[in-house]
Length: 356
Image (cartoon, rainbow, N blue to C red; front, side, top):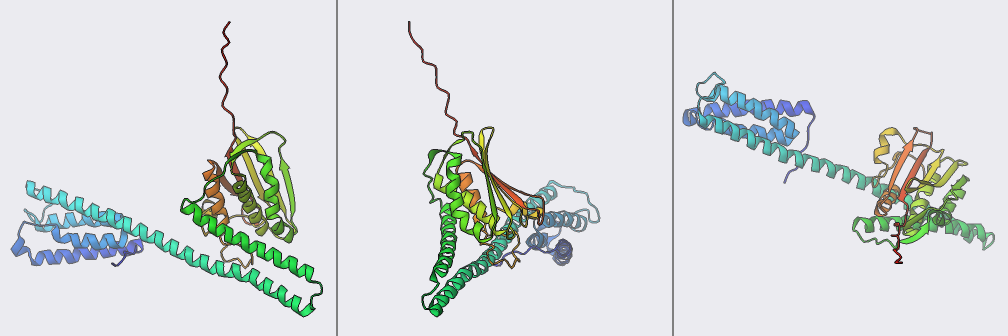
């Protein structure tokens, strides 16, 4: 079945007018047979084509204009917009109602097609990025092995460390891919525990350390000494913070600063990761947590990522009943990501009544 394709506004309206004219000519040709009956039915063709081209608005425009043309030319008395019988009124109401239904169904179809096109483009971009991201560490691994072979076993320690870093990068990439798939299918189960918010910071830093050190960034950690009890899956929360730290490291020029701040705020614990990197354009902020979305898809950066890390962050945070937001002052002015999780405040105990 052919899918509808939304045309630029003026083209859809031109098609609507042409369709009405054609339907009017056809109706005029069969007028000796139909007479005053079925004055509007033939105009359904014009409405259908217009709705197929432009959706509900163009369909409504076509229906109204068709009513005027049909009523003026083909209902008694001709040459007048007057409605002189109940049959004509019912026919008019039925035509408008069915036309609007056609318009609504076409609008739904058009929007579904647009979403499908966006998803298809995102998938194509993702596959291209995935191929690039996999090729880079594999090329480094191959290069390190060649150096080992040429050096005859000498100075292999640095080469082994290089291979380890790239394998670690590949492992994290594959793990994120698997986790996104599991979240989408509802296959991730949280192993929640009562912990303090500060307890997950060290593990997250260790996971992100290779990326931070590779770019020679300065990491500044500020954890509030106040108790911040939370009920979370520590491993998943570490993954959230590690993804945010890794993202900051990737999009901050070499030698930049990354700040990790953990503090209570009302009935929530806040985890804020701020950098002085490339920043986020204002128009991208609402989409930065969408799957496969990259801030600068045209970037030549070799480690720009697959566009799944922040999407996974949002999904995991929401599974914990929290929220995450992004902010940036603009291009090359850094960005900040703040995760908010509810504090695990124990319910107040009821007073015990002591009988005298």
